[in-house]
Length: 141
Image 1: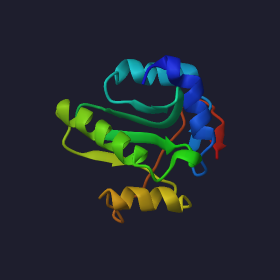
Image 2 (image 1 turned 90 degrees about the vertical axis):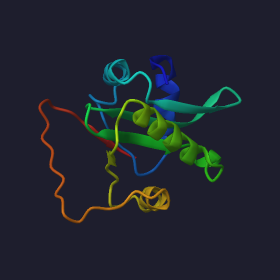
Image 3 (image 1 turned 30 degrees about the horizontal axis):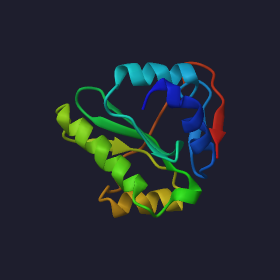
Image 4 (image 1 turned 45 degrees about the vertical axis):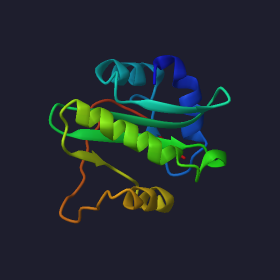
């Protein structure tokens, strides 16, 4: 994925229910910053010149993280999501990362089923917390 893909990637995200975006991290500038830090671990799928899937992945040197994995609704059940995850996991492993985490909204039944099918387990011993350091607007699809 490159920043030139941004508009098509954003359109893909918006076509998918269950996504949780925001106006800072998921802006063109926010994604450009993320890609500059993680240039080899983010991928798109294209079909006939149209982006049909995306995965944003990166790491902090210790743990890998996956964000905003999406496949356009009209291209699902073709193995695109699985291929994107495999590409991201291989890229993270190549960078020496041994463990990967992600967050899925509890209300996103399709997303949770997808990740479970791929062997990602749910943790009941954690409480997810976060704190905004700047004012942002959430965009839930």
